[in-house]
Length: 287
Image (cartoon, rainbow, N blue to C red):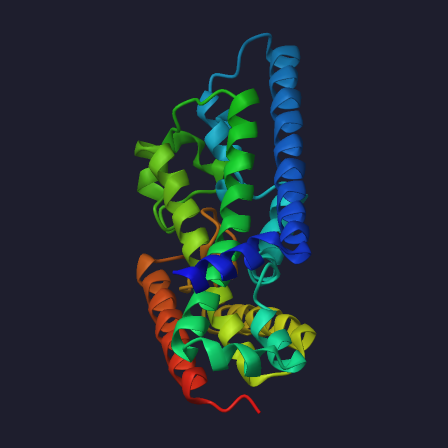
């Protein structure tokens, strides 16, 4: 437990955690500000043009403007584009850096390898997951403070972009709070598992910049390749099952349709990969 507490302090107390959190909070506030201004302008135009309050109130609900279900704001697009990087920036580089400086040789003399590496993976997972989760929650709080929580209606589907092929869409139109919480949960879990896996991969490398940039680009190449294959095979952006986290982390129509089975598979693969890496690192000579 002492080792874990030390790693947690290091993960949540370093400048890269602060930088990653600042980026996430800035993008969350940027998205919320844009959404609030859009809502106010929309309501103003409705009154000016028709002289009445918008009859389709669900299209202007705060739930539609949360980053989990937003597809308009630049801040939202940038947040999800940088999410894999924000998840690993806080502590995903630490094992690679400690190996490079020779710190691991000293710590393994005093602490069990499996306990130290496990604590580091947990610290990386929690710090990365916290950055993403806290930013998303802040966005939800700010949006709901200025935009009414009208009950969603299926009649506004063309405004929301949350169609039946979107994972959890039935939750949005029946219990939007659960819908928002569902996407908060999967965003946290993915960020945590992605950070834990990345930090353990770092034990095999000596360049932390290449580690973070490589994992980031690898995920983007996967998403781009999958999208092009889907378009080539089906000729439409909504008729293929999207397996890219860059798509299914968002609860709105972006590219392809999404399914919970894909999310579970991703979590399972990342968890198993992290366990394999942990076992391999616990036996690997650091010299």
